[in-house]
Amino acid sequence: MSEKLYIGWAEVDITPDMEKHKIGLYGQYYARIATGLHSRLKFSVCAMSSGSESFISGTVDVAGVPLAFSNKLKEEVAKKDPSIDTSRIFLNAIHTHSAPSINITMNYKRSVGGSMWQQGEFAKTLSPADYADYVLPLMSDAIVKAWQERKAGGSARAFDYARIGHCRRAA
Image 1 (cartoon, helix red, strand yellow):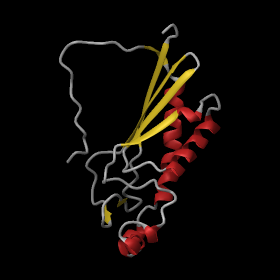
Image 2 (tube, rainbow, N blue to C red; image 1 turned 90 degrees about the vertical axis):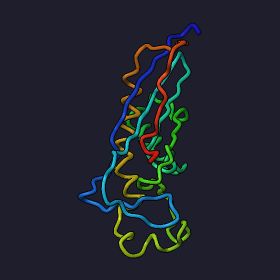
Image 3 (tube, rainbow, N blue to C red; image 1 turned 30 degrees about the vertical axis):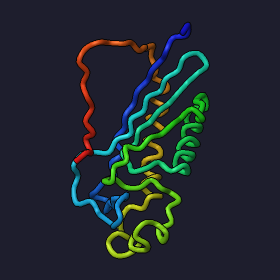
C-alpha cells in the first residue's frame, strides 16, 4: 500500500436525561420503563482513509439501527461537512435491550406487543422520534469530529497475549 492510512476516533454520550423523560426500553416482548441507570449509552465512531478510499464505522448502544435513521444521520453529516462521502458511513448496533429506540418509522400499533406501547405509563415515555432528534446532532458531530481529526496511523501484526473484550451490557 503506497498511500498513508489516516485514522480518527470519536465517542459521544447518547444517554437521554432520565430526570426530564421516562425512558422506554425497547427490544423485548413487553413494555419496560427504565428505573435507573447502570451505564451510560455511547456512540463510538472510527473514520479511516487512504488516498481516495474512505470508511466510517459507528457503533450505537441501541437494539438496532433502522435504514430510515441511518439515512437521516447521513443527511445531517452531509450538511455539516460536505467533504464526507456519506455512502461510506456504516452503522452497527450493539443490540442492547436496555436502551430507547431510534426507529423513527415505528408503527406502535404493529410493533411487538401491539398497542401496549401507546397505553398507560409507556405512552408517557420518550418516543423513538424524540430520541432520534436528540441523538442525531450528537452522532453527526461525532462523525465529523472523527473525520476531521484523522491522523497518520497504521496496523501491524503482533504475537503476544491479547486482551479479550467483554461486552459491558452482557448482564
